[in-house]
Length: 167
Ligand code: FES
Ligand code: FES
Image 1: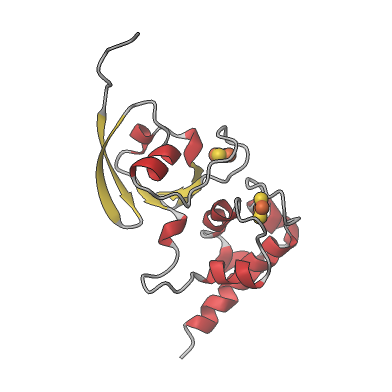
Image 2: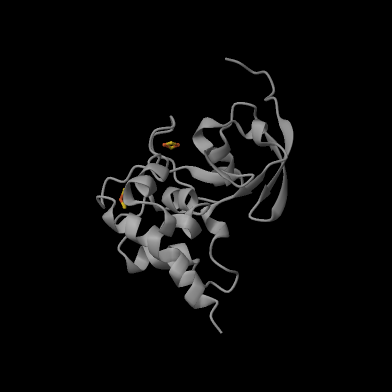
């Protein structure tokens, strides 16, 4: 039996605007640290090898698969997870409202990944063809919806946002 003490590395992650000083084993995946160390279980884990996209979060503003990244390599990163979408008063983000309104989810397992993948692009979705929008979201897999509602939701989110901010 291996009785060596576990090797822990100090890291600092900013997650949804909150700074977390953590100690992690070098082998721990970022998705597992988000879920198990920080309790942010909205980031789902499906395939654990970079295929399904369920674990997508924003790292320094860009979508990335958190199951393909060791937490130590995210040291110093600014991370946004699905928990960072809704406002503090509980009001849904326009993307979340759009997914609900346009039936962009059924079981919901893929939804956090889709929301985070769509976050950097939804405001320019109107300028994209359906093929281009599907290509932009092509890293995410959904086994329930057939994608029609998801594409409609991403298209509708900017309009919902504009309505929200109307005087
Ligand atoms: S769990 Fe990360 S891509 Fe599937
Ligand atoms: S809503 Fe079930 S996998 Fe997408």
